[in-house]
Image 1 (cartoon, rainbow, N blue to C red):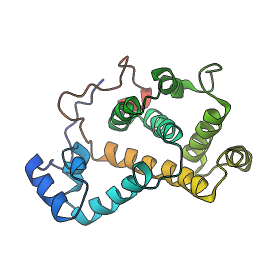
Image 2: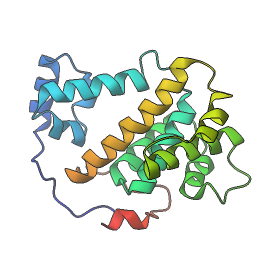
Image 3: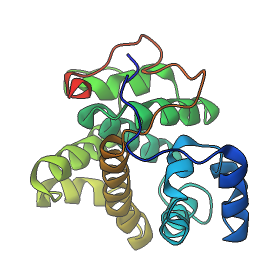
Image 4: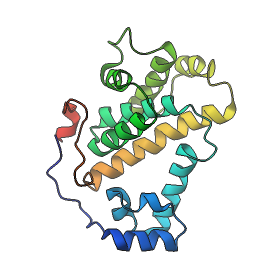
Length: 196
């Protein structure tokens, strides 16, 4: 189910986005993405946002990549962010995270076989943050039992906040998927929240 909405801010041509990204020292692989073809209208802000992504995804990140992707996929599902779910489905496949694990985040409370206790604790932290704006003491204690360093614990909170913000940004600006990218893989099922 791909969105039929038009972006609220026109996407820059790919060549222009690449030039602006290069002028601001940004990662060149981000420039062709629809979200950055919009964000690069404000290059200083785009550069700051890519700096956080770069840290959390590529440079010295401490949070386990699989847990990070489960966080992002859950946020994408709960908030109905087709772009976030779809792009991170692709990234998760590159990281060789099993499809069953990603699908399980859609209804993780009912999944008793696929996800580990740690996965479920992380997803509980995501849901609590989305619902109440913070992780409860009980959930924090369970997560802290396996996220043993301050860096991991900080990245847990920052990752939830970052990709929640990106979901809001993607949905509010109506950022379209790149040409030829299929939405809501693998089965096309989308959450009810994606309709509005």
